[in-house]
Length: 180
Image (cartoon, rainbow, N blue to C red; front, side, top):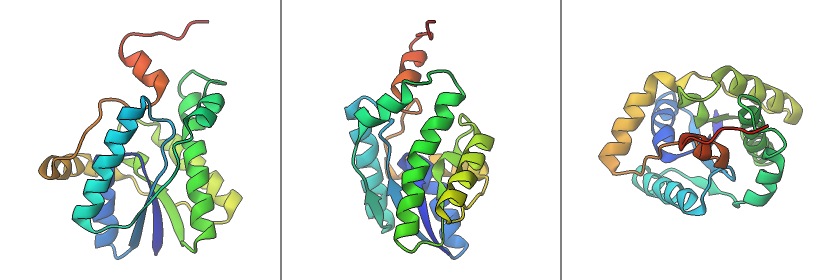
């Protein structure tokens, strides 16, 4: 299959890329993460992906950083897991649209690598968006490859972040709490 893979970061892409290529798929990356804040964090992740793509020789499509539009959407709901589901949908919708318009057989996401993400919600959102755009969501539980991906990232000297990237998760990471 020709698969478009939404990439949240290079370390999370390393294992799914390796696995999908071993399975015989034609893999193209899709970098779209307006959720990542601050901008220097976004650039560090993007540069890390560019380094990985160059080493591995993988094609990656890079999209705009439409942080303000994303933030307007995201601030409507700030509680987890709803805000995370909205974030998944925001990014996967753009991925699915691109995949459909550019002749891909299916789309997936590296979010399926993380033990910190709401895995079943990603699967649900991916399937719903796939139905909406008439392109299959390729589901595979990539969590088993987390350590392999981290080993590849370490071997390649790739930047590894300490939080999902969103402004609210960064705030929570340093002790912030949602106020009502």
